[in-house]
Image 1 (tube, rainbow, N blue to C red):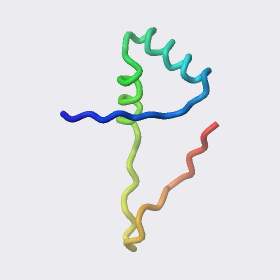
Image 2 (image 1 turned 90 degrees about the vertical axis):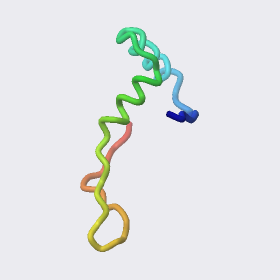
Image 3 (image 1 turned 180 degrees about the vertical axis):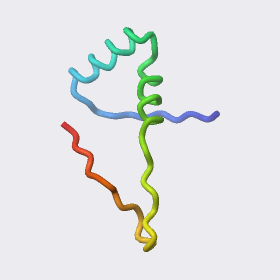
Image 4 (image 1 turned 30 degrees about the vertical axis):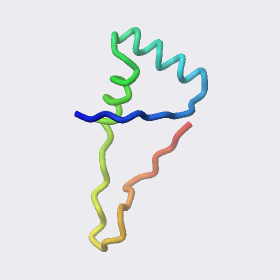
Length: 61
């Protein structure tokens, strides 16, 4: 499997939290992020052919 790199900018507090959780679960940060991505549901394309229609808005804090 070919893997690529993902670079993101997040608050130091969130990075520290991710590191703590990874250590507690004995996983890498990559494994945590991949696990989270696997839980995401993809929206189905609309029948009108205009792309995707979100069923609900996702709010980020």
